[in-house]
Length: 105
Image (tube, rainbow, N blue to C red; front, side, top):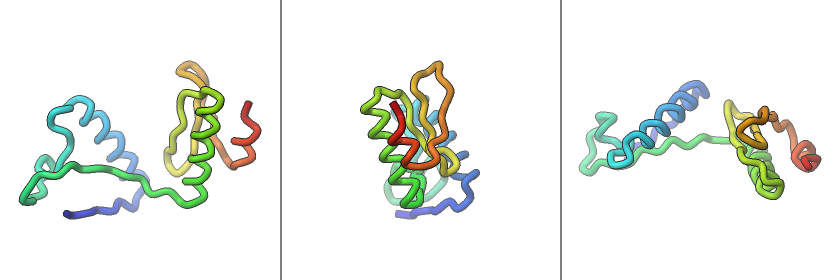
């Protein structure tokens, strides 16, 4: 198995935007090594995983837990920043630190 690490954030974001729509449009033939031209004995699925700093990871975890408690709809990380949105129609909020998470109501 071959593992690639994408260093540039813009490349990671580009991969994430490309893999999800592709997999949704092709549920029977999700992104795999054969489609990327990687010759292996057996085709294997391709996953794109973001690396987060320990601080960002813990902040994202705390934000997800708080969002679940309060019934917020979305919590995500983009460009290394934690974002939250209460509903489809609300504006997003940039979560800067754990204090912001604790003050949410």
